[in-house]
Length: 400
Ligand SMILES: [Zn+2]
Image (cartoon, rainbow, N blue to C red; front, side, top):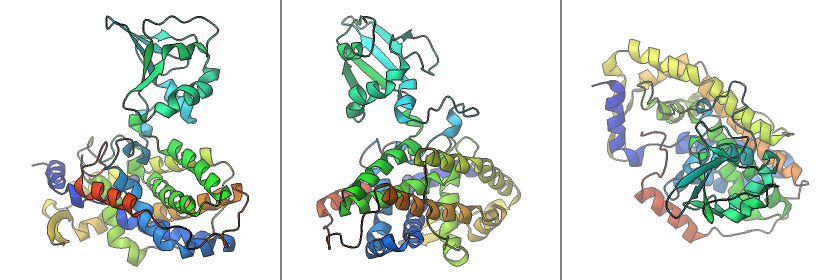
């Protein structure tokens, strides 16, 4: 049996035990260390809540069991899009969404007409709406955003008329808006939206929101530093390397980070333009992708087959995972890449927390109400229940 297939099948048996993303270990470590990058005005508050920031770094992964909309926030398939000149991946969310949105008018006799905006990037035959792309911001936020999380995005046909000088005649009263973009990941857009929320939380001095958003932004920024979060070949499934996702981002840090890595990364820096910055992060991650895959491919072909996978006891369950020596060989050949990506993630998280605080006018964090809030136990219990009992809705990086 092919190694990849064997390992993939084995992983399927272990769904509940696989570590998502940097692994719970990695996310917790990264968030925790980010606290130590902060300036004196911030560090007291963050140290006081360092356990919250650490533990809740993994909530977004747990939420992948609760809603299908969560999974897409953890990645962006840069290579799905024609990224060389980048023009087919608009950097603003409403542009990206609408460039790949299809507007379906379905008549009573079930005849369907499919419309697009003039600035669309979809391939195929469509009718073009007489709506200027200059109105895409208003069009998205007035008509679509509040319905983004509905199972079907349904808008009044007549509401589109407000965006056109020409009269538009549809064969139906409702229009179904089909999203062809999100399934390939929305990570950098989601980070931008979260950033705005975090600034607001700092402005409002809302302790609970500040902590929750900081913990969760730490998670998404962590994901953005992982090369395999920027590709359609996210688990090596297209190159017969199934399992490489967890190998690179969970197994390697778990084996080597505590002893070998230096997590003191210096001081957080102010980021002037966060939206392009988030793109820079995912593109930098993507630039390492070829190496991540090529090194493992070559090693797996030259290393003795029977010494690549070993059985280990975890929580009284026997699992199969990459042998320590094999992992050490891969780790060595990557020449510090995993440590560097983790270090960059730590500095990046601290810098984003710091920048949001600066953009919020540097509110005094020392005299916020304390103990400030009590965590909603119900919310937490519900998340825990779904995580432990469920299966991931949408893409599961480790096990597909
Ligand atoms: Zn994640």
